[in-house]
Length: 228
Image 1 (tube, rainbow, N blue to C red):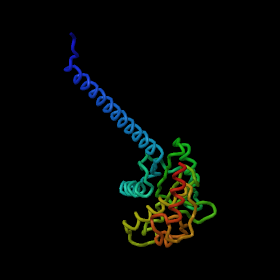
Image 2: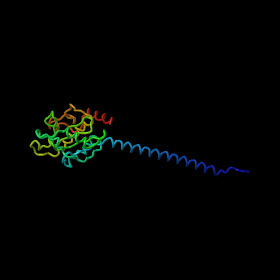
Image 3: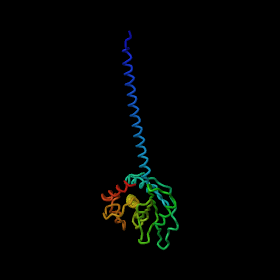
């Protein structure tokens, strides 16, 4: 008479349970790896979409560039890098005004670098800038474009015959940089005198406003960021 081998049944059940465990582990590993890949792709996408370049036009000291790099990254939540600089275009100089035409320098930037819609370039120069309609400008930007420029010349106390104040100069520089990059990101002038996007007719306006967006401009900034 043949009897069933009762000892083989637990082994088969044990093997079946082990296979189930292996399958579950495999699924979990695949899920974790897939999530990691997706997160990596997402981070890479953010990195690619959020880059600001600081481009010196002429000699700009390292402290100013590093201060801008840190503060702009904090304000715009974007990766900020210092780009190779360029010489001050001689053709931009107006000997009658003893100033440089800002729009001409922006044109030169177009010839110097090839940028994508996801990149913003902020040129920083120490020379005094102007546009034909105004006596001077602290900066200029392409509204919703890739390029902007700021001048440091009139941000120094010494320009007006006063002793230099380094901290005040750097704070003014940050405000003008945020302002022009705000234009490049699609923001227009703001009527709020404390908002960084308020138009500065003089340093009185620059010193009065803050280095950040007001609540209204911040909402617009977030809205523009969603579409970029």
